[in-house]
Length: 357
Image (cartoon, rainbow, N blue to C red; front, side):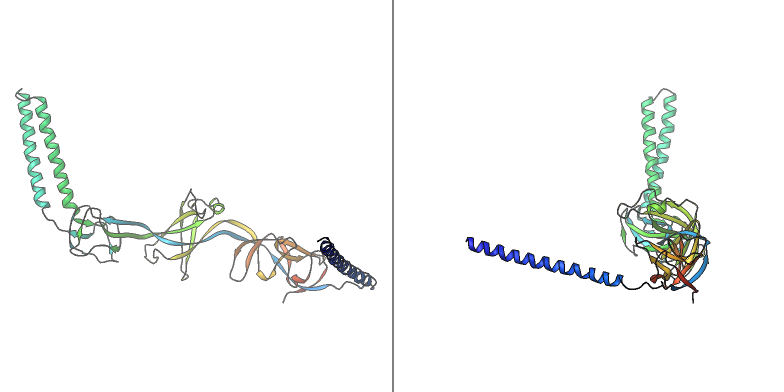
């Protein structure tokens, strides 16, 4: 047992010695290379040639740009307020209707008879009260008896009011100008109180709706102009009317709304849009994304040359995008940027400049 243990320890020692000898052999090799290279004669440094372009800053709008959609200014789901059967449907789905237009006519059933009965009861109770007052003045009837007659009259009047409302409820009308977006009943349908009848939407003004970050929400003010662009290229503008004070618990974003005039009816609720809101102006430079590079710290920036043709690096921030490039901040007002060869030169290195092609 001891013999095998000694044998294992011996093998392990041989492996360690072999590994160490390999490490020492590898570390000695670069030293020899470095020594040989240090004996080579010094040569004059050859400057890299780079393409350059002179650019100047411009005042550019600082914008918040988000995706959103259009919503109707108002939408109301109309429900039945009484129980009856559908007699007629004068308006078709999708039609424009003015406020007060009859949408659904329900059957009268016995409502007229109940109304007449209630009217007769009110008349009868009014006579009873008048007679009770006369008798009470003559001392032939007590105050309590008069109050009882007056209470009966109040009940009769309440019954009459209910009968009048029941007759009114069988004519279901639109509450405002709008479009009959949906209709949930058909001829002959039996409706119970509370059943859905129709959906009316008002698109004379639409709401441009979107969600912004907490940081962006702090830059917005009610009344600011909001520019919207539809997917088909059409554009419109409106006014910021709502900024949520409570963020969405899932996304931590804040809902905003802008009212957009739509009297011509060209904007439809439900379509996707892009909202842009100008929050100020800032000096920026327009450059091609191809000139952007990274420094040793991983910062995005642009390389330039100074009056001595020495390479500089300027960390930048993206302000907004354009059709053919990007607007960036962080550069001097007037600057000569490297547009070709920037990937082959380092900060502090002298270069030969040629105008960018």
